[in-house]
Each structure stands twice: as C-alpha cells, then as structure tokens.
Amino acid sequence: MSIIDKIRSFILSTMDEMYKCSWPTRDQLFESTILVIVALILSTAYLAGVDQILFNTVRFLTTF
Image 1 (cartoon, rainbow, N blue to C red):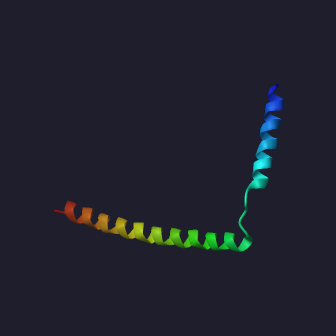
Image 2 (cartoon, one colour):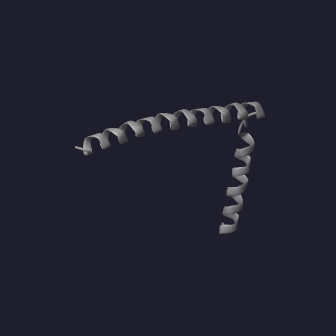
Image 3 (tube, rainbow, N blue to C red):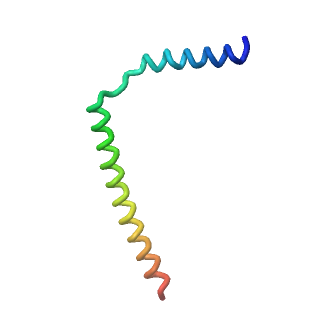
C-alpha cells in the first residue's frame, strides 16, 4: 500500500466519522458562545481583582 493510498484511506475514514458526529443547532451554538463570553468576563474580572490585591500587598510590604 503506497503512501498516497494511506492518505486517501485516512481522509475517507475521517470524512465518514465526521458524518457520524451530531453537530449543534444554531441556537445551541449561540447559547454556548454567550456562556463562554460570560465565563470569560467573570474570570477576567476575578483575576484582575486578585492581581490588584496582590500588587497592592507587595507594594505595601516593599515600601518599608
């Protein structure tokens, strides 16, 4: 079996598996996207707050 045949076999089997997948609907995709954006905003706000607290703590401790 040549390399070209192996590549062709791989591509065909990959396409067969992709047809077996259950893809989300447009509404499900929209809801998931909104959820990811909200989670990103919340985690960013949390990390920014922790960063500010640690920054101020280190600055306070090093000014003596």
